[in-house]
Length: 403
Figure 1 (cartoon, rainbow, N blue to C red):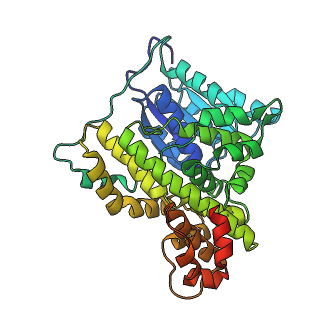
Figure 2: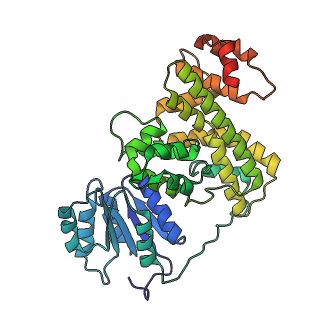
Figure 3: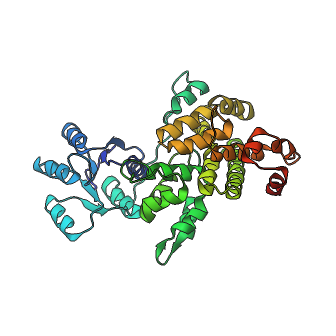
């Protein structure tokens, strides 16, 4: 495909088994060509079927697809003798010379090793999908006639991208780099207060392609399982998404408040867990994620505005949060398949169910109650609560935590 015959609107196939890597590739591609028509699939058989039915302008395929692997997909494509040949980017975790020699006779347009270099991939896509110096701009699709805010939010609940970023990811990654590469401990310190990054990395680390052994329930565990390259790619990819940052002052103000509540809950939970010799980081993580739904809803409200919807800022925002916030959080945690144990800890922030409670669940409930106290409220009533009695936490300990 040359600059002369570049398609007006490119049709692209992305075949990648891991859902988070698949989404990352989609975001990088849309960042180059926001108008691209993209088909996604997770296995080689589906990729072959789509490639036989659709005249794609580009295929991005992982070698390690389940069933029929990506190299076999490429071989099948080349046997069809298309003229000109279909541009085909083959990705693989194999970086040995034997694998490269095996792929070369099939003439992939590019052979990219994982974890991908996002800058290199972007340059490849620009060369394949844009004329020299060309940029493509896309307007946000307008709302359908008669669309109401309530219907919009109900429909967006199952597809919401999650919370807005509360951390500058470019700065976070830059600060974590040193001459030897990315320092995961430094990176953790930079991003641990961001609910969206925390949730996405834990979800990605638990996805089918990554899952080995016990479920990942903390940010540190997720970073370790994903490794430096994949962690960095996923974090930087989040910034490419629509409404990744809130620009509306009212929505940003709400987000700051919910973020602050998350931070306070997480810190109290970690302190209580340390005091009681429990898992500090898991409790911290549950506290950080418990307002994910409210933050995700605020992001969708900005998307509503960007699509031309009117918003009575204070009244309608408050009503939307009350009606949809909890449902958005539940939908995200389920769709992202966050570990059940972590979801149970998050649920205990709001209420304790019947039966026997784990000590960590009690810690989360107490931490949330403390975070909701105003600066003028004391902890005396909390010290008398059933939660405090079950934890065997007294007034002196609670008072020290408030300092």
